[in-house]
Length: 255
Image (cartoon, rainbow, N blue to C red; front, side, top):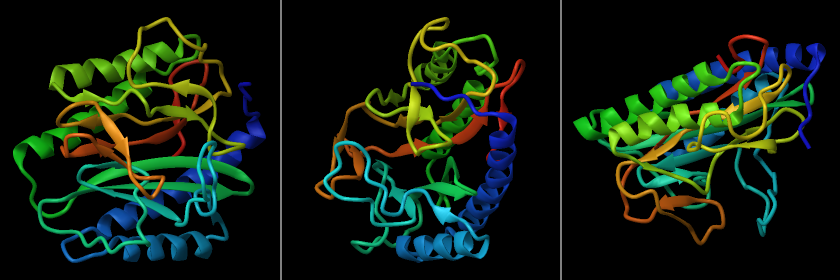
């Protein structure tokens, strides 16, 4: 069931979203060759605690999972699409890598969700274009998220950029409602048809999150039960914002 947020909820989400964005910016600035995923996770925990908030991901157990998620931050490197665990096996960033930093924040009981993919040093032209296009797809999806439209309008806007770039557009993973819980209705896929899906009503809070692969759209789940990888080993990029639907253009909360 879709739960619309009231003005008080949105004010809290707006405040939490600003904190969320500041933390992601600091984490992104840490990215360089030689930095480990565990260091990024530790710093995320420090920054969240300093603000009096808590991680939405640490100890979160999604439907179907065999165990709770064991870290504050999802750190996904290169062919890791999402949900990479930073603190169970050593992952040290190297020149030419890309890394997705995905953070969920609980502020005064309400949740925001956002992610950014960062280049580690210098990357190839194809990889740099993948990052630009995936971020552009997020912007296009947000522009399409106007009150009175439908989820499919967001999906189509994202899909068009993915098709134009020749990327693999992941179908099994998608955006979602957020706020009271980490994952809420509606499901917001990165492919679809305009005018279809749930209506975008003012007060709806959703996480929009395009994920594009340089190769095939196929993915596989790792043995850790959380990390999704591209099936062909190609690089994958992921960008995400939490937005609230209004009568006009969507408001980005995690900025």
